[in-house]
Structure formats: C-alpha cells, structure tokens
Amino acid sequence: MEILIKLLLSCGTLGAAFGVAGLLTWVERKQSAVMQDRIGANRAKIFGFKAMGLFHAIADVLKMLSKEEFMPQGANKFLFNLAPYLSVVFALVGFAAIPFGDRLILGDRVIELQAANINVALLFIFAMMSMGVYGVVLAGFSSNNNYAFLGGMRGAAQMIAYEITMGAAIMGVIMVFNTIDLQQLVRAQGDYLFGWLPKWGIFVQPLAFLLFLTAATAETKRIPFDLPEGESEIIGYFVEYSGMKFGMFFLADLVETVLVSALMTTLFLGGWQIPYLYPDGFHFPWGASIALSNMTVVILGILSFFFKLSFFIWLLMTIRWTLPRFRYDQLMKLGWKVLLPTSLINIAVTAIVIVLLN
Image 1 (spheres, rainbow, N blue to C red):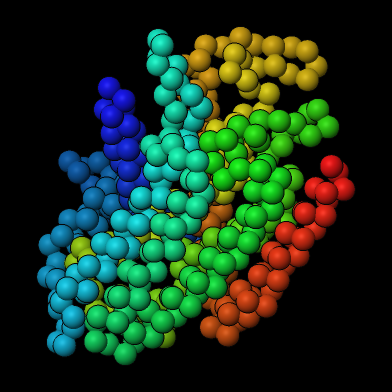
Image 2 (cartoon, helix red, strand yellow; image 1 turned 90 degrees about the vertical axis):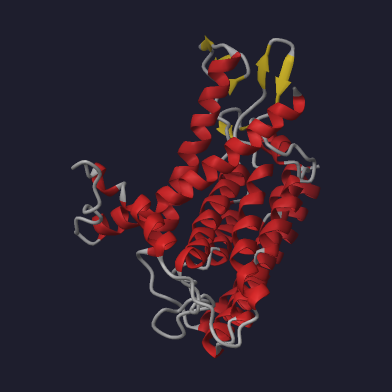
C-alpha cells in the first residue's frame, strides 16, 4: 500500500508538472498579448470552439510530432538524440522533492504530500538542476555546428555562474531554519515574528530572495538571460534540432520555470502554509478561531501552494516580456561580480545576527 501511494504521488506530481508546463505555452502567448495590447492565440479550434486559444498547445504538439527530425551531417548520433532527454528528465525529477501539502491523515495512515520524502531534499533538487547543463552542452557539442557549440558553451558558463549564486543565496535561509528538509523548512515557516507576522523566508531573508529570484531567472535561460539561445545572434544550442526534440528543449525551459517557481514558493513564501491556519483550523491573534477537518486544512494548503506558484510564474513571465537581453559580458559581470559577492555578504551578516540573537 505504501508503494502504491508513493507511485500515485509521483505520477500525480509529474503529471501536474507536465500539465502546468504545457499550459505555459498558452499563458506566455496570452500574457504577452495583454501586455502588448494584442489578442493573442485564438485560431486553433475543435468543433468550432476556440476556448480562448487553449487548443494551441495541442496544435503545437501535433505540429512537432508531424515534423521531420533532421540529423546534421557529422553529428554524433547518440549524443545528439540523448541531449533533449537529459534536459527534460533532470528538470522533471526535481519535482519529486517539492512538498505541495501538509500531512494527509486517512484513518490510521499518515501520508506526506511529497513524492520523495528525503531529509536532504534541497540538495537533491540542486543536484538535479545542475545535471541539466549536460543536455545543453551535449546538444551544442554533438550538432557539429559552430553556432550550436557557442550556444552550448554560453549555457554552461551561465548555468554554472548562477547556480553558485543560487546555492549561496539559500544558505541564509538554511541558517535561519536549520534544515535542508523542505517539508520541515515549510513547517518552520509556520511560526510568527512579533506574534503576528508569518516567519516566511521573504521576511527573514529579503536580500536572499532578491538574489535567488535573479539567479533562478538566469537558470531558466529565458529573457533577459537567454544568451544560450540569442535568436538574433547565434540561434542557440538547439539550432540543428527540429520536431519533438526541439519541443523537448522548449518544454525543459518551461518545466524549469515551474520548478524554480515551486522552489521560491517553498523557500520564501511558506510553501503550503496559510497565515494563522493550524492542523485543527484557523487561530487568529485576536482570539477568534475556526475549527476545520484535516482534509479541509490539507486542501486549503494545496490551493495556497498553487496560488503562490502561479504568482511566481506570472512574475517570471512578466520579466520575460519586459526586459531586454543582457550582453554576454554584462551577464557574467552581474553573476560573478555583483550577485555572488552580495550573497556571500548576506551569509556573513546572517551568521552575525544569529550569533548576536543567541
């Protein structure tokens, strides 16, 4: 029974990640259209129904499945075919350690709403995210194309530079909550500062939040950090890909967008936590309370998580359609000379404050 529950949780988590990432192809079109005073995707229809352009995601899949897959002359066939799978798989596996809800109690069984309930979940997610660089590098190397190779090298340099900043930025959060178990970290954010302010990561580590947001945006390789692609310059590491293999690289970027949004929700916005909501219901600082069942509390927590997740996805999409692309030297300067030193300063200041408070 325990194995079946874990299997269902894993399949549900992967299905949700795929579904949200696929939906983002529509969100990106519609949100950019609203920002640019356009209508956006509204042509694809089924039996006359357009559903506000939602069928465009289905049309995209059918189009890419029906396109010819091209193998460039001189390419390394094995690595060329392997690269897109590496990009997608490692991005998806990271979702296994994301807690999207509190304990669900069914009779005498307690179910943790986390596909992989491991006590080093944060390290696991960062390991999977860092492995994604192999898909980018191998795609550029195996294509036997100078522009693809240049895009792969750009991608590797960018992801390494900003992953270091991401790791340094969250050290302050780890020092405050003293755990890298994401479920325990979320529960620790259920405490309150001054008796009323939720002890969320964004309130105890505001600088770390800004650093992590910037580095996470770069990790997704999207505007303004889309130097590995650079459509007006080198086209990118996937220039020789077509059909569904190109679609997998595109999907990997969207899956990474959802993953970093889920991470920011978990680390800085309390994950599934709702202010003043406890396992037995709401308890407000002024003395009022509302009793709720465990199932209701869990459902409210799941809805809270997805609401916060949607906010960060919206924010990343807004940044993507607002800011212009950095030059490559600006990208490296920002990563190594600004963000990394600032994150190290934040670690030092956090350590000093914790020692003084103790």
